[in-house]
Amino acid sequence: MNVNIAENDIILTNTADFNLRHIFDCGQCFRFNQIDDNTYEGVAYNRALKISQSGDTVTLYSTPEEDFYNIWYRFFDLDTDYGQIKRRICTDEYMREATDYGRGIRILKQELWETIISFIISASNNIPRIKGIVERLCENFGNKFEYMGKIYYGFPSAQVLARLSLEELSPIRAGFRDKYILDAAKKVSEGTLSLQALDQMPTADAKSTLMSVKGIGEKVANCILLFGMGRCEAFPVDVWIKRIMEHCYFDCEQPKSSIARLADEKFSDLGGYAQQYLFFWARDNHIGI
Image (cartoon, rainbow, N blue to C red; front, top):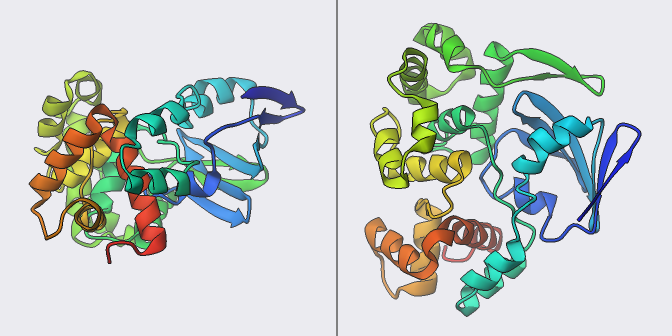
């Protein structure tokens, strides 16, 4: 990959294993939206970004070089060799087909606090509704800023949310999840849950700590580990993944524990990558339904 600066834009050429639809439509991120065939816009780390792709050329518009290297380079996981990852996990025909179909997926390195709240909101929910709740949360309680002539909103801090009542949070229309949002915010704001300490824990301890927060079960905890903490051995098992794994690797219905055990045996420390390829491939093609 080559990095070029043209006026205020960052232009990446010779990119490999990078496709915007694959990255933003595989269920890992809720603040980026497609605005035309080849362009997305969204917010991360209190920065807005408009990004487009033509072949192996990717353009980040109106992006300071400092922001590219300090935020977006890591966000898009540009220092990871996904070709090598795919070679390691392609141990059967299903994985070969899944990795070929979602060949441009990259696991985004997202802000931990935002990931915790976003995946609490994701419980028993669908992606369009999750996006709506997250956006209303930011519009009502996040900081406002301008980028390329448009107004955007950052993700509200734990301290801001911890001061709210359930009634004050009601405009985001989160339903039963509102009390979980406030519980997590209060724990982080008061220091009961230290994000810094959490990020330094071994994966098993971090998972156990996350599951002590109301509204965080095993699947949500694994999503937070994978997308907010870079623990790529985490393999979230939701209804989709359960059906996909049963379709590909079992001849009958299985408990989630058996699914998780097989994933650990097959994919080991790369389980999170395998999960994303399988999810994107199967959801798009209605496999296992």
